[in-house]
Structures are given as C-alpha cells and as structure tokens.
Amino acid sequence: MQIIVTGATAGLGEQIARDFVAAGHTVYGTGRRLDKLTALKESLGDCFIPLCFDVCDSQAISKVLGRIDLDKIDVLINNAGLALGLEPAHLADIQDWQAMIDVNIKGLVGVTHLVLPYMVANNQGLIINIGSTAGSHPYFGANVYGASKAFVKQFSNNLRADLINTRVRVTNIEPGMCGGTQFSQVRFKGDHQKAEAVYQGVEYLTAKDISNTVQWVVSQPWHVNINAIELMPTAQTYAGLAIARDI
Image (cartoon, rainbow, N blue to C red; front, side, top):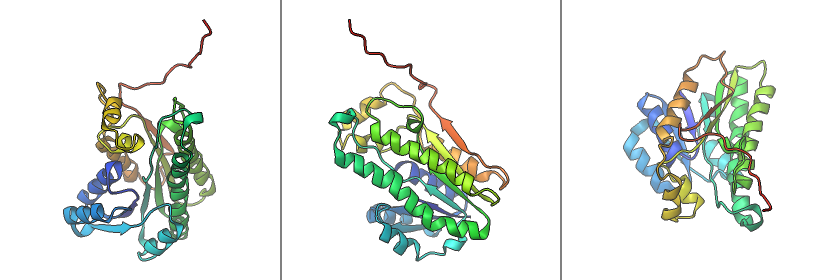
C-alpha cells in the first residue's frame, strides 16, 4: 500500500510511519522540519518518502503533494495537530487559538480535499483522522483544542455520509492521555516541568498503542468501516460534572 502520514516528524506520526514501513508499505511522510524528515529517510530507507511542507499553507499542500501520484494513494492518515496552552478561555492567547484552528482544522481539510477526489475516482481508499477524547469530553483549559477535535469528529462523520455508495472509508481515532511524545512539550511551550507533571504516576497510552490501532483499522476489509475508536489508558476515565459552591 501507499500511505500518506501528516505530521510524521515526531510522536504518533513518526511511530505510525515507522510501523507501516516495517510492514512493507510505502509511506509519504509530511512535516515542516526538513532535518527530521531527512533523518527518518536515512533510518527507514527507500520505502519512506519525505514531503516537506506546512499543512497550514494551502499552496504548499498543492505544490508538494502535486508532485506525487495521488491516484496511487491507498490510505491518508491526518495526524498533524497540536494543543497550545491550558489557560481558561478568558486568559488564553488568541494566537494559540488561531494556530490550533489552522493546523487541526484547516490543515486537515486542506490535505483531505486534495487527496479525496482521487480515492472517489478509484472507488477505494481509507482516511484516518487522529482526533481526541477532547472532541467529546470537555476539560478545563481545552477550549479551542477540544473544539477543534470536535470538528474532526463531525467532519469524519459527515465524510462518511457523503461517501455512501463508494468504497472510500473514514475512521476517527480518538486517543485519551498519550505520553512519550512532544504533545505536552508543545502545549506548554517547552516547559519540561509542566509537561512531565501531566504524566507523573500514570501508565499512559503510548504512540505504539495508537499506531497498533491504526494498523488494525487499515487491516480491515473494504466492506468494514470502523467509524470511530475512543481509547484511554486504564488509569483515565470520565470525570464527573464540576460544581462551584458558594459556601
């Protein structure tokens, strides 16, 4: 198979790319950091094809992805995404909000819009969107991040509706707490102490856990569509409703 993985330079995307290459597939890995992509190429060999562009740049998406034969793409994994800040909404940085919207929403739909027509024309393909439990379950400080992942959830559902009577499948994978990646480092803008505190004493999900889930979805026959998978570490569960008491 030929697979596009966005955000392949670290974390979930890197693990997913490595596992697909190890399974004998061709992976087009996208990212903004050419040095990271080059290192991955050196590590993974000819089955990994680096594509350097920013998913927020619609012209770059068209220019770079236009160089490959999109007619041959079997799977698109929209993994690129980020969280910035954990402040309450009235204290949040508007630039953080806009950046999350640009990457998590605009970037995802930009790549999808370019690749999807080829899948429909071929009457086959699979789109896997990496969402989050934050798209269904609010938590303090998630504001725009959670809203952006709720968009991913609903966009995935509506793609499924539009793609009825085709063999193009869509899955939204919604992980809970996942450690061992740069997610919290990015969220807290390099504050290692804050980032490490998030996972202290918790046996969290790993990038390998998410990649295993992606591999399983891809392995299903064309007539089986996995609409959504929500997964959490055993140590995480749903919180009760918060109540502010005037005592």
